[in-house]
Length: 278
View 1 (tube, rainbow, N blue to C red):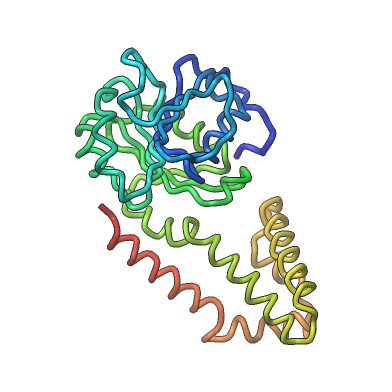
View 2 (view 1 turned 90 degrees about the horizontal axis):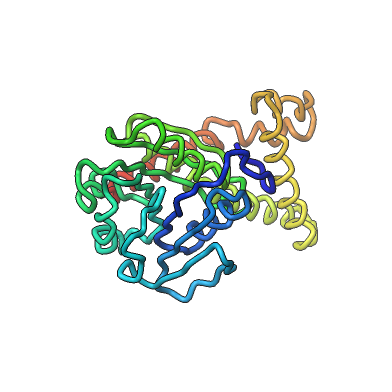
């Protein structure tokens, strides 16, 4: 995992990186690459008036037609919206055979990349999540058979600029990955909302309840991230027999409590991910 503010120890790429789409996730990737000096030059294709910090090392164009004819990118990264994916991808087929393609477009499979780029194009599909915006994301990636060790290492490096990276060999696993880590931040934000609401219902001022909920979830998450101790052990360390935490956990860990509820939620998100896959 790469820590925010720590420079990538590998020398910057001599060939430019081409980023197609610079919305929230594409912008997070670009910021991570620039902060860690992943490459000497970046080209961004973004037709919308999406703001991002300009610099001499970044060239922005509105369409693929405006890219230099002699462009030879080290990687082409697709961060476009899924509904625009099929229309956008074929314009980059000219780079097939010369570079690796990395897609973070939700629901767009390796097969859909092959349709737009050709079956022999080295392609990686990845599912990052929104904490990438602060360098604390996690992405899970899957490569097709045309991706060699060097291309895989490059994609790992690009994704690691905004957090942790894991790889799977079976693309079907990206559906439950989406349900756990892709959608997971929303579950945590809901926990903050619910905990704050419960605190207010118990008599706390609403602003204080929200402050306590935010700080507690953020602090506990950071403690879990920095510790090698299993989550169950961390939980037990907070739980005294007969104490307040035990009283609350008796509710949360009941047969109809949090664990089966989350299992149903993840199962629902996994099913929907499969339905949306293209």
